[in-house]
Image (cartoon, rainbow, N blue to C red; front, side):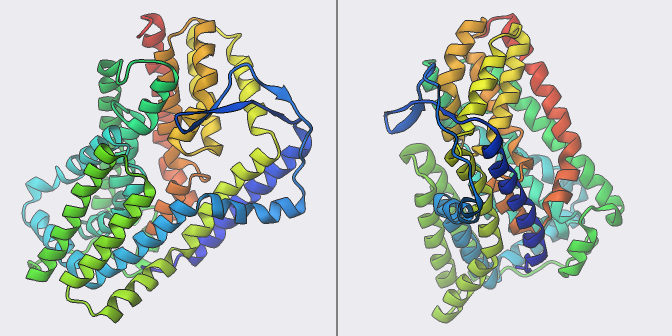
Length: 465
């Protein structure tokens, strides 16, 4: 993997500036907090329990220690990144990825009538994963692979990154049975599991269709003229050409096929583990670590090649780890400064005085603002739904609508947030500066923002249950 030093420096500076800005706010905004209690292992906010507390301004020492606290709080996802970087390098060193990518590139270049199905088919697949078992962090494993494949087919690293990441994000935002967002939110709102699924299925279709169309439209332009790519120079500097033409079929050795089969088997077991056994990021990390060891063995690498490859790949993730730690530091400062609950309290008060349709739409905007600080879907549900559910009763909208506003605010906004550890981790793996990604994503983000506002109108009008 290419070094990400320039990317990391720019992004680290930007994220740390945000941490400093939030620290300044703790000197301005009066303190406040909600009471919380434990229910089935989840920490829930007690509605109507907000009280004013003494301000806790965060000074210079708090600012300087926040990234370390953020590193410790985000230790699992950071460790996950190290493992992903390490095992991908091991798999890459077996030659299986290069051979597989070359074969697929040869296949599509010799069957141009099939190439048009490549992006929609793969993005739909990732969207299904996002809407069913909540694929999110897992997309990191696919980014380097699809980035190489997309470039070999004449696209760029933006397209390769978008296929798994935005595909899963489209499904995540159009959650139909996602247990990590929809499931927990409906449980807290005391709604039947998976209730309201027909309308959610319609939302998922729209989300997947428009996200795929956005990526395909850009990919078509890059295919016709590679120099219009926003990352053209970046891809060239790391030795990748956008218009590479594979004229001959690459040879797939038996060991390459064995490695790729081990990879596919691990993905199947990942789905089983998440859906049936409720695996979290710790179990996923263990699975991928086992995959790396197995790939090294069947790929005929020596013990030294396996260990050195893992260390090299993990080393490349150090910049990504620091970015994630600083992103988490924003939440650390906001919590320690007692201003996050204040924000939630005032936004809830604003919503309660609005007309029903506008209130539902404001719920969505509120969830997006909270999502800037809290990126765990289950964590955001536990924080906001105990307040939003009874608030929905007060303003005359259904709790089902409040859950939908939460899913929209937690899903469609995530892929562009610079404070999201997963977003910055994905971009770190791809070597794409956040500012270029945000510029590219701006049109579709505006579109989905408007779409979310429109999709919240029918549930209010028809009192959707």
